[in-house]
Length: 390
Image (cartoon, rainbow, N blue to C red; front, top):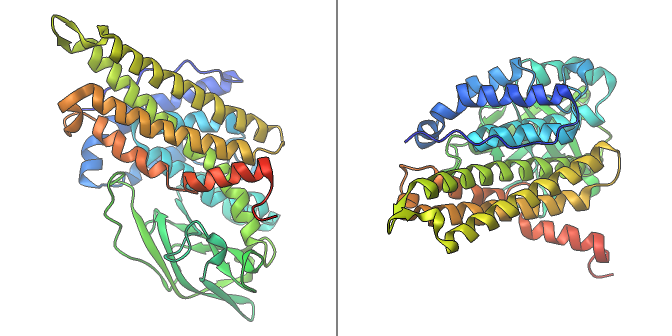
């Protein structure tokens, strides 16, 4: 059966422009995304035309400077847009978050000339990006990456393989972290690589438990030559750029997680108020009512946590600890809420006739991407007690 329309969330938004933006997103979500979400996810189809529409609507560059085609929106607003999109289809919400992550390095650390040359197409010109940090042998230990970039005159030649790349094989550009110097974090540099550059190829997409419509693949760089003008930041600055990008990216994952959780809660409430057993709606049974109350409370707490981190970021204050907390709490909440939604629907929750089982499968990956939740706990503890092994 088609997914139910999500219930509108009563949002606290800072401006009338932001309220109009959310209305636009909801309209696009209901007209263009929701009607085909279940069918296309089941078929493993990536909705490139939706991303083209989002780009044309100014929704792929919301937190960036309008001088280069961005939307000048604070993270407080941008993240709520992600939540709205993820609530109807995580492939779309997460895809926008990944594109924003892929654009971050150039938008934040690029030269003025680089930004003028590349950002307008990246933010509003229909391009789609991917972020290349992880490798087959370096996931959580990203500083041990092996992809190399070797200087050759005015160019760099890149060789290596990146793994678990969202939009791998279909992206128009890749933000690539490669080793240009010594071992460890200080020997890594960031590059902007065109998706159609000679020597760039992708493996077959991974066969995943959820998010089947979002291609995740290894990306191979075989003698890929890029000019030094495509180096982002200084040589050896790449790992610091990557970590800075991930702090913001984790907030995107948190917002997407709350979107999925909210969709699951809406489905569970609708079903529980309609389904009758023993002569009354199952929503009248106290055990189930308490489950719904706990689900709603954890969602609201997660939304408040990611918005607190976003407002710190918007104010120019440190937010890395709060970003890790938001990613941890919101994705754990999504896993718990979606699992409870399946339980509330009973046997129907275990079938593909209802979206609850899809939400549960999708929620799992959010506990893994952009730093596993075990890594988030390490980050939080480091802020509280200092580095390990002092």
